[in-house]
Image (cartoon, rainbow, N blue to C red; front, side):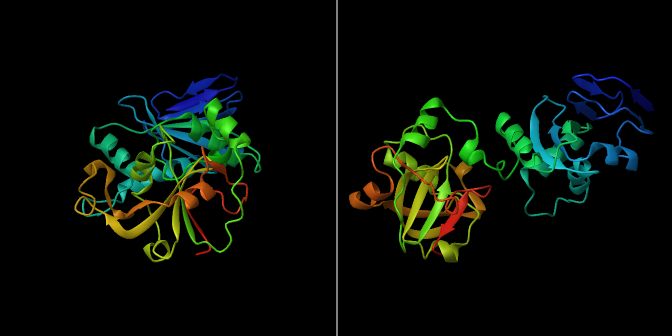
Length: 290
């Protein structure tokens, strides 16, 4: 089937396909789909697209489950990767697992080109803004700058720029872990339970740390001593919901730091991390002096 467009529209869906072009300027070109599912863009389309940001949508409920950026045929690579997996794989990412479920239902992933012809210097920011806009994504990493400049309640914005800065930590060895959706910064037990697992990290490095810091959008909200680091299995953390455990990740048992240490790192409502080298980027775990 050949589909042609010569005018702009907010959203153009090519019939019998799973490609959607979103944005103010839809490509003026002819795209031929021999089957209902286009497996690759032509060279002409790749050249015209330039940098783009895309979404993968589950046709069963319309949910966006992945946001990415790329060039050429990057948008199709996830479906291709899912076809190479078999039931013998021990670990399947949430994204590829979702794609396989869609295929098992006899359906195809909907691919949306959300914005194209993006300048090189802007593509990371556009991707990050889109990741921030959709909840429940299967992306392992957040968007660039989301921790520092992403969506935040006005109280979080006030805290971020009005709270005192974290002083020079000297030679202290730290593991900083970025956590989200913290309901009560005054509840140390709640912070502890959220920061203690489950993380992809180096246990050998983590075991050398003096303290584990819980961080919410660039603000230290908790300081803890880790007595031991264990694989995040149900057996090792039987006191927590099994849904919190991930066997190939790690967690710790420990306790809140003493009052003086807590005051140094956290203070009353938290302390801002101003050193850009100490801030989180995409990985939720960051090491300091380790």
